[in-house]
Length: 398
Image (cartoon, rainbow, N blue to C red; front, side, top):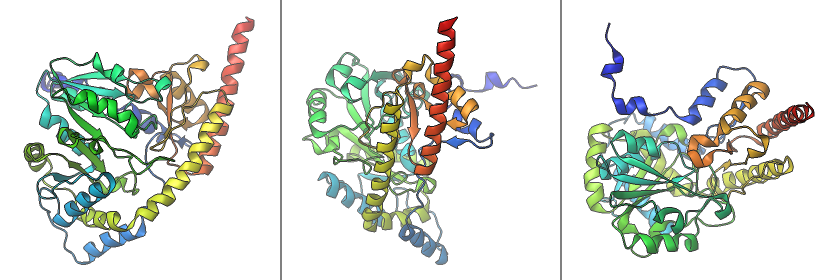
């Protein structure tokens, strides 16, 4: 019998499975579960995007595309970034179309990091950053943010984490899971500090279209920062195109020239149908995004008010589509809270600890679901909290 433990990579054996998927997979085996765990928009991909894909299918022209991505899409991406951020990227040498934003992040990390290099990871954050760093022998260095600062990164948070091996900082705003954003005023001291270093920035802006009351500001808008930033974005969240698997990375030409090789050998090209549809998304779907944002905003305000009413202090998110209420008052860990809520009330949410140690004491709930589902979930959560309170009172009496 072959001993697979000897065959498998030690690095991959040390990587923990995604904390998001754990509860989602359990919920999928149960009847009557309300799952609020995955960031999957409940809106259909806008019809004009689907129609563009259908037209490609009808032409029966479904082929491999250029490694970088089809030229009209790269041009549209370049124009979109310039319109939003007033920064010009050459569509021919500074943009790669990727299989989702996740591949773009992977390209950036693998293109910059050698074994032993350190990457500052602002937490709480999306679950993939640290594992991607560790899989190539880099060292993921957590940089916790605090609710007292509205989960924004400050210079004080990061300056003591920097060593001579620090090569990259991952800036995840608007933030998953907290919903925090960084304004221009928030970003300026970060930029001032980093200008005096050789540290690059990976700015993951996949939720940049989904903000409430404030326009998203990218760090590339600040003087001299585009040259030290790898800009990542995509179509999954804003355009409800999760299954289309399309993202992009924009960066200075010397970086694109090198990370392109990873994409070329590992992926070759992004889906041809999705790329053609994405051109339509960028050219004609701003009004569709606005409608989705308006609906998300209704859900956001409902959940924040409900959690605060129930005594679970809830940070007021200004971006993305998640709330991140604090559950410390229950006396349970994040994992315990989520397990009991799933099995006792059939509501699936994600423990904050899945997003880094600084997320312990919180849970993440996605409001990319209908208001009807959210209201039913909150009724069940209220019943669960009442049961916990009764248990606590019973123990106090004994």
